[in-house]
Image (cartoon, rainbow, N blue to C red; front, top):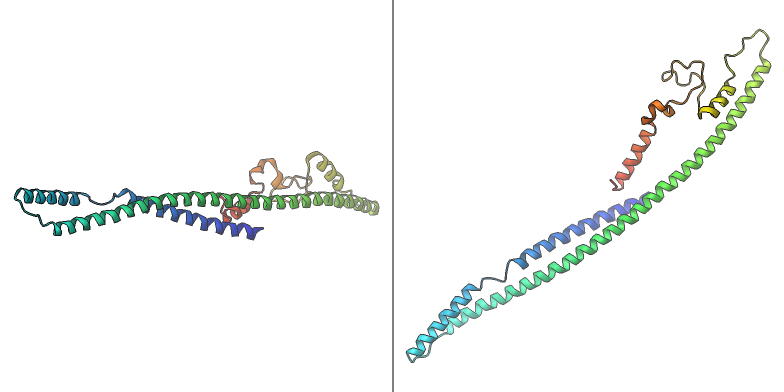
Length: 233
């Protein structure tokens, strides 16, 4: 499942890059569309000049020679027509690219949802498996405590008349503590943490209420780091 999540991460990154490229292409096309269809002033000036030539020739009873100016006007008008085509094409392209970017964004969102669902399934699977192991270990702990209880009674049977009695019946105290406080350790297991509990059962340090802020800190950070590796924030 981890491979599938990482594969989706690569697909999401590629889709996002494609989306950003579509936006850049759209912006360039929109700039061309907004730049106008060329300068019509030069053609208009030549049209006025041609009209003036025709008017003067008419008043003089002559025929005006407009061949040269007609070619210049046609050349400018042809350039304007091409510019209008380019402008219209750029505007149409910008609209197409906008639609493409929207589609890519939706596709990226769908991939992210798919990836999130896989990641949640991965965590749920681990949760269920860990919970099952925890329950198994709880019953295993009870089973070991039952064995320890019986073995302690066996040691009591073989204790000689002149041997001192132990300071406490360990399994009995563990059983009382387990019923009253939950999971407990025998005396002396964590002397650096609990130097004053040499002769008393005690909670494991990580379960102590005074240190609850440290509980599973490394595990939480490890999971957070893994999720960041998949692309989640």
